[in-house]
Image (cartoon, rainbow, N blue to C red; front, side, top):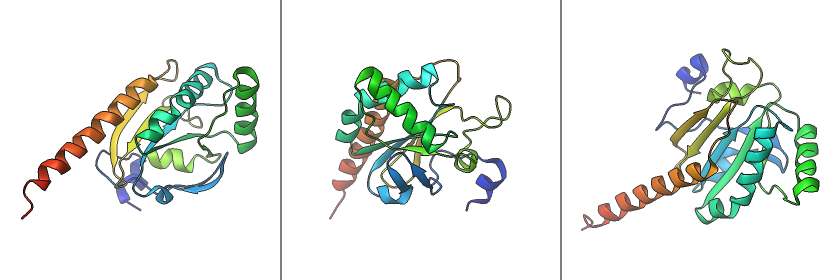
Length: 180
């Protein structure tokens, strides 16, 4: 593991995303299973919280847009799997919306600390509203942080993802003109 991550718990733009192996609402996952895909990893303070519920619904409504961009969406909080499942069932019963992407249970906060999702100045056990866009090469391409009191714009996240992918595709197509 990167020494700097171990010491200050923050990932930086351009570095390889630290591996995640965790239990989720869809079973066990490893970040490395998503090779050649983009990932939007988002953290939130807790299940059943109003803003988190609104965000999970919007992420779900836009999920196919992310899939069209070769992107997996993964949520994470320090709540338990049972809490996640009860919350997602509640969302389904209330709205008819089924959440199709995994939500990680990080009860001990190990992943959250590794990624810098927990701000001791705010709360030493809840994750903040962070977003990490991880490119298809496994590198951190964008990091967004929001105060827990306001919701984030899922459309903005999708727009940033589209711009990063377009820039990468443009860069690759420009390189192809130099092939001999």
